[in-house]
Image (cartoon, rainbow, N blue to C red; front, side, top):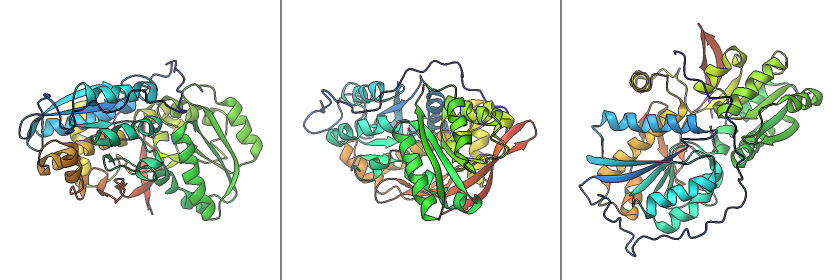
Length: 399
Ligand code: PHB
C-alpha cells in the first residue's frame, strides 16, 4: 500500500447543526405520474443519475473516494449502467443537512434524475428520508449509517449499500469485552452517527459482560484539541477506549491519543473509519496497534479485491478505502437494477432493486436484507506497520 493523500488538517470547519430540520417546500414537484421529465431518461436511452457526496467540508475526502469508486465502475463499463449511457450529475452534499437536503431536492425536482446515489452524513440521510419517500424516487445511500433509515423509518424507496451504525459498531463489542479485562471509555463526535456508534457498541459490549468507565461526545467538526477529553479519559481509570471519528477528526484524535501517552497503556478501539485510507496515512505510526471493526480492508485476500485495488490505484493514484468500495458497489447495484427495470419510474427501479441478489464486491459477497441494508461480513482489523506505511491487517471475522 503506497502513501496516500493526507487530509487537510488546517481546515476550519463550520459547525454542523444536526438538530431538527425543517424541510420547507420539499414536496415533490414531479408530475402526477412520478415519471422523469425530459432529462434523457426514457427507457433504453441515456439515464440521468444524481451523485450527492461531500465535495467540501470535513467529509470531503470521504465524498471524493465514493465518487472515484463510482466513476471507476462506470469507466470499466464503458460509461454505461444496465447497458444504458449514464448522464451523471454530481452535486456537493456539504457538511450536513442544511446543504445536503436542498442539493438532493434540486437533483430530483430540477435535474429530474431517475435516482440519487451517495450521502455520507447520517443527519443528512435522516433529513432526506421523507423527501425520497414522498417523491417516490430511489435513494441509494453509499455511506451514511443512520440506524432508522433501514429500521424504524425504512422506506420502499431508500436503499443502503454501506452499513448501519449499529451494525458496524455492534460487531466490535463482544471482541472488546473478551480482550479487555476491566472497563472501557466511550468517546465520539457529537452528532447522529457518533451517538449511534456508541449506543451500538455499548449494547453488544455490555451484553457480553463489558463495563463502561465513562461516555463523552465532542463538538462535531469543531474539536481540534482533544487534550481536555484525553485528561478525562486518564482520570476515569479506564483500561481501554472505544472511539468513533472519521476524516480530519480521526487524524487529530489518534495522533493526540498517542502524544498524550495513552496509547502505551490504554488500547484504543473504534469503528474502522478511525484508521481508514488517507486518515491512516496521516496518522502514521501513532495508529499502530489500534483495533477496529469494518466491512472492508485493503488487506482482504479475495481476487475481486486484488483486481479492484489495482484498477483503483491506477485511476486515483492512491489505495482504495471502504468509501471507494461503497461507491463502486452502488454503481454495480444500479447496473443490475437498470438492466432489470421496466423503465425509469421510481417504482420500476425499486422493484428491480429488490431483485439484485448477491453483489460480488471487493469487500466479499453481500446482499440487501429485508430492510434494504447491506448484509455482510465485518472484520476485526489491527493497524500494523508495513515498511514505511501502516495497514489495517485483518485479524478475524466478527459475527
Ligand atoms: C455518518 O455520518 O453516518 C458517517 C460519516 C462518516 C463515516 C461513517 C459514518 O466515516
